Structure formats: structure tokens, C-alpha cells
Length: 268
Image (cartoon, rainbow, N blue to C red; front, side, top):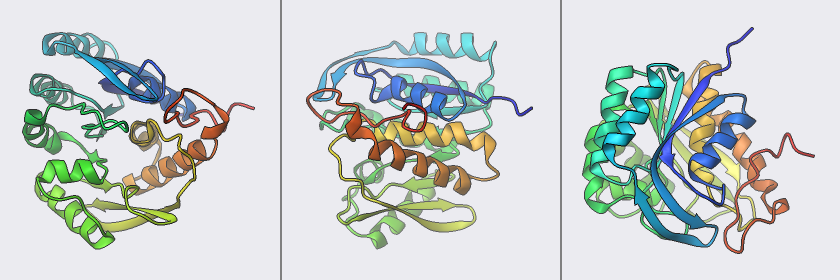
């Protein structure tokens, strides 16, 4: 019998359930992983935007990580919102101490509503402390530009170039998401030690895209222990997300950008 992977989300909250640790737990559960969480920030947000953020002290983030991981080692980790440099350093220290097999870093910087979730002065800490410890990073185009300190990619060629520069910064593998480009097909660039791959998916027509980045990165983390390599896990996660987007309009949650349907394959 194959062991059920224990998946840890290190991220902030979303009371509306569409993003953050709530979305991560839903994706973990939908894909057959046992979900655990360490909270880095309490976020008052809904489908319409972020009202306020209450940052969890770095010392308490460390306390959560030590308490959990000394009892329940994580088979795979997804990292999302970290808010400031002290929390980033706390998470980096725990990764070095406990050495989980797989680490997926979603460099959450700005919410879909445009509200900033990572302090600008903390970008350097994220780049220097966490990028080298992550097995895969999953930035979208604005996040990649923020990490690199350069303009956002406007073409597929520029995406390839930025993915290479992110690896030069220390990232082991990069999934650069191209959803911000125009077109009926969304193309992501996956850069690993074996080369570069373009992964395409049809653009789903829906305004309910809240939490897509959280959902994709947590899906990759949940699936990686059951796949032989990163490309296989990424492809399966993208297929799952496409289904969640196609079913998103059936949920009818909120007055803004609603969530994707994490349980589209399980609920009637």
C-alpha cells in the first residue's frame, strides 16, 4: 500500500477559502495528500480584495515549525505568503534543519486584487534566503520581474530568458507561468536541470480565478511524491487546475473574483 504523502503548507490565510492555506488544504485533500499548515500571516480578505494583514511573529512561526516537524516530518512542502524578512529567515532555517524531500516555493507578492502581500524590502531576503532552498519556484510574470528587478516579460522568448536568469539567481528549477500574456492558449515555461519545456493549456474563460497560483503550487507539492520527476508532477497539477477553473463558475462565491473549484472531480 502506497503511503499517503504528508504535505505542509507554510502560508497566510484567506477567510473566503479561495487562496492561502485554505486553498492549499483543499488541493492537498483533492489530490490524496494529508494536509498540514504553519500560518505566517492572518489576512482579512475576500474575493474583492485585502482589507488588512496581521503578521505572525517570526518566533511563533519557528515554534509552529519545530513543534510540527519534530513529530510529523513533511514529505513535501509548499511555501506561499511570508510577508517579511524575519519570517523568511525563520522558514529558511527550518528547511535547512529538517530537510524535507520536496519544496515548492510560490513567491506570493501581490494578490489578484493588486494588494501587496510581501513587503518590498523583503524581496531581497526571499531571493537570497529561500530561492536556493526550493526545489521548484512557481512565479507568475509580475513576480518574476519583481525577483529579477526588471520589466515584466511580454513575449514567450522573454519568458525563457527570465526563467534562465531566475535559475542563475539560485533557483534549482523554475516554472514561469505565462497566464498574464494574451492569447487563447496559456504557455508556461518549465526549466529544470534537463532543459526547458513549454507546457500549454487552453485559457479558460472565467472571472473566478482567485487562488490559482496557490492551488497550482500546492497541487504540484501534493503530486510530486507520487511522480517520478518534476515535469510529470507539474503536468498533472496543471491538468487538475484546468479542471478546477472550468468548474469555477458553478460555485458562485463572493462578489469579486471567485475561487476555483478544488473538488470538481469529487463533488456531484
